[in-house]
Amino acid sequence: MKIAIASEGQTLESMVAERFGRCPFFLLLSEEGELEESLSNEATQAAHGAGGMAVQSIAAKGAGVLIAPRLGPNATMALKDSGIRAFEANGCSCQEALENYRKGSLKEIPLG
Image (cartoon, rainbow, N blue to C red; front, side):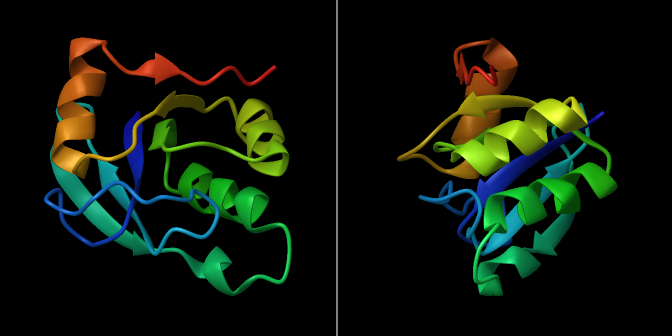
């Protein structure tokens, strides 16, 4: 199971993105926390439905967990349908968010 983080940049030193559906990148990490891929978010250009499109992108890459600042209703529904768990992080680097997730200190975002 991979961990996806909504990111402003392409490294773990980047800040967690302020928005999920239109974040510039997703960092895809192994369960051990190793960065495997930096994925450009194609949904940033969508007129609507960016959250659902972004979920499809990370689901196709095998993500089972998402770390993001907050989620809109379309993203929430798509995550629930995909079986991806979501955790809230903001105002920190992706590395800090990952460390907090691994310690169990991130709040899980309810998906309904």
